[in-house]
Length: 566
Image (tube, rainbow, N blue to C red):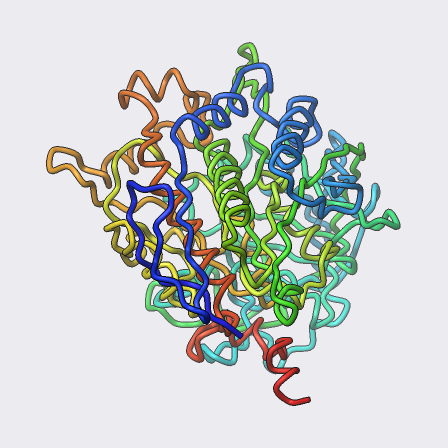
């Protein structure tokens, strides 16, 4: 097989001819354009789309626009209904007055008060849930062979309600910690628990006061996708009750054990793992929920690869097309949360990246592998559109060799570096560095590891299926000495992220306009990442030391490897 790619790229030229030979195919260098990025972003962030909330008409319009762009480019449909992968979502709301938590101490019942002592969320599994069971304290509720945790050792929690403390011990790597925090409930259910009570801690109070949690609990809603057969997605099918408990109300749970809740706080302060114990109490948890259903879709297209051995393998680009919609704060008239940078900008970059691949293919520079583009829905509701695709992929999941995710590029300054979340977990880190270097851009380490961003966007749903992924953001360095890219990024995150002000006119007023020239460079780098993956002989690999590779990875024979053994 010939190898494509002499990377003699000149940014200012539309096509650069490398000296061809019989073995080497000429590399075409398509160029992103500012006006295309601007046109896509202005349409998707327009007030008429009303913030593109999942299931709302505005998001449907955004999806139709993306379909029209895919069709115009001549990309093949890759959904299960043409370009669409239609999804039914269940939205659950808590019935007022239905949330109950009662402790049972022998013959004495101790009712706790919703919102004052505890909160709970609506259930997407059943409209009525109730459970009475003994309480078992399991510390943080962690199990990890790698980090030496097993809070369930020597305790059988079958048919019990486990009591855990919120948070995690200090010293864990941030991304691994974020993952362990997300799976606490799954760990409990795997060990037979039928309910979970989580205790709010004084440490957590300093970060997110219980009053804030109370405020959101009043009108909380939860959303999940339904399978094609109408079953709700959940690894929590056996969970019959849950509650989040204020630490003052939790003190009475420890009256029958040899330590107090104050002792637990001291052990946490000393960075020790609190002991587990049967609490000698039981509890009843109950609540009622009401359901509604909404429809929304992922929009998916592909450009087929041309190598007969590798064309079934897929390089997947994702960008979420939804945002928060119309938001009513404190009884004021609803405002449109346009999501200009989050994530109309990411979709615009993906559409322009797709256009570049098509233009290169028309000039004869094709990829060995297929490249697929997915505008996924319901990211803001819990990465649900990407998670649905991961469970019901429109191409065999084992054929997806990598995911390049595009989410909230902060195009407000001329960045001089990029940060690739996930770079340290797979060979994609080197791919990103090589792609960025072609445009004089460096790859920097994660400047805010405490945010654990690798677990907070759509690629995480694919990572959990064993697919190496990378997610680029503009770095904190600027090409201009008088511009502090890190400060601009921080200001946007603090003032405009998930706010009404993430819209074109406000950003233009504060920052002098969205930097579409920076968007061109960002698009070029993302194109090069896909090109390198799409033309490489080997598919990307998890690095041996990667926690996510160890947890989710696993060798899958490639078509090339299969051929070599035949």
